[in-house]
Image 1 (cartoon, rainbow, N blue to C red):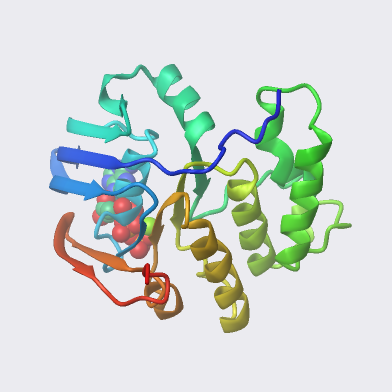
Image 2: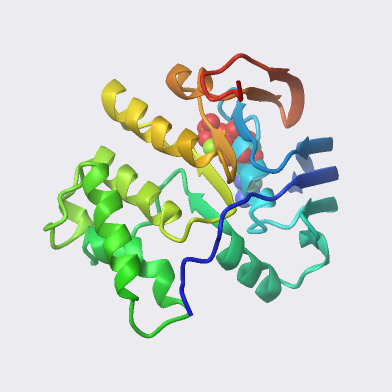
Length: 237
Ligand SMILES: Nc1ncnc2c1ncn2[C@@H]1O[C@H](COP(=O)(O)OP(=O)(O)OP(=O)(O)O)[C@@H](O)[C@H]1O
Ligand SMILES: [Mg+2]
């Protein structure tokens, strides 16, 4: 059985009445958000506005206090944490704001890590894909540990890891934050090319990313204050 889990195609999202509160303070309050299959959406807004929190709710990492998050036919609110984790493994590529790489491992081992969750050894096809992604992204493949990589190289390793299994949903938290303009353009191009099939939400402040996204949603103080269709370069012609 191949581990390249997605044969193409994204998933649609229907989010309803989501609220998240910490210590009695509401930090996310989204009555409704619909995202079509294969969409490419930028999520922007000031620091502390709830962008990462929303992304974690969408990934099923964080349970909202109320409401539903339905991806395709799956309502995350109705799943136990273990089922939610299994769903995420099969469907979502995640780029965390803080990368979450394993310092002791090499770039290649970090990228192929998701393939080891369901397999004792990494299939050759995925090993080759990992090498290709890392080399496309200019990450030193021979490095023994990601600890010695620059912040930008670590970020690109995290993005390669999220893309490895061709997930139907890609959720990326500030994926270009540490990158120079040229690297940011290259990563954005890779992400937007994938948008032909995958459903992609990118938390970003980066104008390079925003200009490529056909839809831009802005959060302020936990609420969606604008939701705009743009003529981004990634917009379907
Ligand atoms: N586990 C938590 N406990 C308490 N407060 C939290 C927790 N997680 C997030 N918050 C608060 O929720 C708010 C939104 O945080 P979040 O990380 O989603 O913001 P953000 O828009 O991603 O910000 P940034 O652009 O700085 O990454 C912040 O005020 C934050 O302090
Ligand atoms: Mg954040």
